[in-house]
Length: 332
Ligand code: ASN
Ligand code: ZN
Ligand code: CA
Image (cartoon, rainbow, N blue to C red; front, side):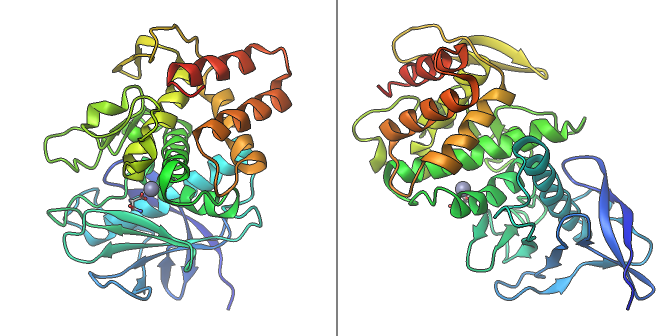
């Protein structure tokens, strides 16, 4: 049967009113994104396997913007996948996660009070729990961009998910998730260098992670040290998250979209930022052209130096900033 691409309206929980790409089906609509490879969003209805049910609606207006409504998590997830797809295309020139135009799919309402979200390369899909109270789904834009970008890393550098390469894998997801948030430029979820600031995962309004000074989360490393690879990958990622912040925005105090940052350096040096648009180009080029499964922090420095040289030249201020930012996080 003929299926038309439609434009729906979503009332999201974290990103305000959003436009959704949907598909006409029977007398109603389904969350299939025909503009982006056919990405589908499913409701697991608290299950933990399979796909559950494709999310459907009668009038193409989806969700009520609250965690008490079953459709709302699907709105955020579908929107997050679309914004990540669009960011890959417009900023990175990449056609989907694997670069081949193939869509992933999203599953919401996984488990009971499940406080996590994850990418699984075997299903080429991402999955979201509903949070402690089953009303704070882990579907914010930065989290969606983070999870989908685990797929991108698996399709490129394949960074091993342990030790320093694991920290680089996690940081890549934070860097790209944050870049998606800035790209989408939602008035309800303005771009920031915080991860998970919308989902209240700590129950006290604080974010999950901070890129300007990662140790603010109580566990992440601000700087490289010999034992950093022994930390959990969500803590060893701090070194690269901090590098990316310094490269983008520079050291010291700064306010962006109303959020105050104060990024230190290991040796008290001053780093001048080159802006996040150039910083993400350098990171992506390093990831897709030079990093491998065993890249550690020293090799990540070399990979980004090569990327900056390719993109901006051997004598460029961008290359000098890459070196200054790595030195600022004690990667020599
Ligand atoms: N949400 C987590 C992540 O993407 C799940 C995990 O620990 N792998 O990193
Ligand atoms: Zn992750
Ligand atoms: Ca954020």
